[in-house]
Length: 73
Image (cartoon, rainbow, N blue to C red; front, side, top):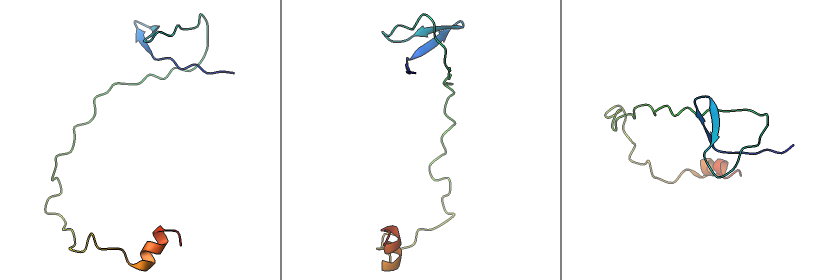
């Protein structure tokens, strides 16, 4: 069995190739339709402003025991 991937579009119920590839005269397979639904509205920047504070040592090196766990030792 071999697989063929071709970019197509549907035009009034007919499958039409979008590229130079020609479609086989007869074939069977699965059709997945990619729904071009618009992305949901983005969340505004600063949504959680004032709800938490970043500690002063946020960028400090990790303790040796924690670092060893991350390194798999």
